[in-house]
Image 1 (cartoon, rainbow, N blue to C red):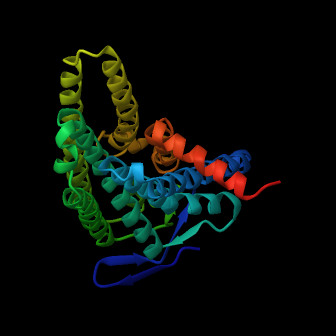
Image 2: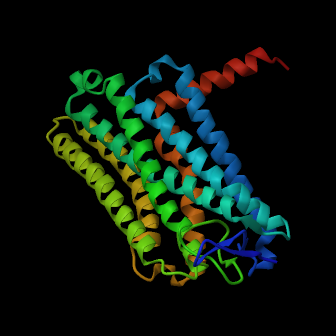
Length: 319
């Protein structure tokens, strides 16, 4: 079923892997397919809707919404890397994925997740500037700086992913090729390697901890300054509004970073494959659906634009 081709010295190149997915729960295959299909549909509609709304409303042409549109784009991208394959293996008998396809899937999911991690940090910094320097906000957060920050997040995400993926490609893979996962997640790939993976694991751990520490430091520092400044405000309404905004953002950030820390930075967390699969499903499938709700649909300007858009469509298509 799995073909192994020996080449180039002591390295083995496996042409296909078999994804186990959730096959240990056969009675849940159909319900899981419906659940993940619904979540993926809502993710695409929600995030595409946010991007369209931001583009058509001149009031939303600000740095905050510029970053938000990129966050929505990233949510679509990394959800689309995992979810279609997950839906496929829930309904078909053939659960194979090629070696090249597996490494490509891992590269993109790793890149998009790290990029989103820093995009959230950039958004926190943007809010810090808006609260601390409201009069100079548009000057400080210039188009040039915004473009530089966004380009930096994508570049760092791509570089980190390239290093980790390269370390995986250099490993040997042999045996049954049975991957106890629904996608090419890092620990699942390592589990089917038959060579010393210590360098790859060290590289992954170092990059994960460094990226987590930097992004969390930027985020937490920004919100600490925001809270300190808001507490000094004479207006109690402004205090409540700012704390509500911080709570929403920090809730989303805590879920995102908490799951990634559990998967990659906590020793022995990968001993339970069910936990790994559920955690991966949460950050790859669920979080992209939640972000539009947390960051956008509670926003007054976004909701008003959506209402006007729906009204104009209804008026242009009279019953």
